[in-house]
Length: 338
Image (cartoon, rainbow, N blue to C red; front, top):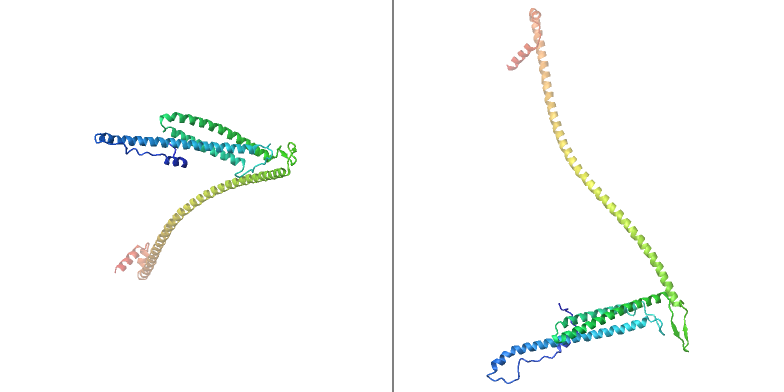
């Protein structure tokens, strides 16, 4: 697939490409030749379209080449400036800032970005070369191969330059400098190796203090992290215990509800049994009272009859003693029937 990216410059060049209107031939058109000329109009239109397309593709490829040259020129200029800033033996050397747009790190990153953009341009040129006419395709591919070789060389140079910039930043930070300064009279004075000026010493002390503070803060952070991990472990254990206790309480609650229902059923059964027992007790008491009443009546009747019989006939009382209460009961039954 062809990449969708097209530079504005290339689009402007394509729009400015010359267009010829070959659909209206200026030659005389005799009546005898008119049919053949009319049949040539579609062919001429097709040739015009192909010519315009080839011109547009060639113009777009040239626009990519121009942007490629601009990008390579920018990379070389900025690389030279960065290389000059890394030369600590220069006469008026001044260390660039450590951070910000003027730092060596930012300038190296910008070089990498520009190199990536130039590589995209070469890829676009390669896609466009496939659409060029056969007469120009081989030449375009040779140019693209040369451009890729130049890109590899630039990439290696940028990598070395970034390494030199990192080394220069490290030397500026540690203060191990050896530089030469020119006095007003033109005498050259060289500082001793390893000598530190006041500003560098102050920066070094600040960096050492910051390093110590950083280590202290890192230790505190590690301790806080361990404490946080221990707290998290204890919290997880507490949550697990609470979950287990909650499940146990729910089980106890369910068991209590079941037992309560069973106790309610037993209470209802006991209440019914108590009612039946009271009912049976009343019935038995009534039966006992009736039996006692009947026995007392029978005894009374028997005693009364015996007393009458003993007063009227002493011989019958002596000859026929009362041995049971059955006659008295039969007599009482006959009386009750009457």
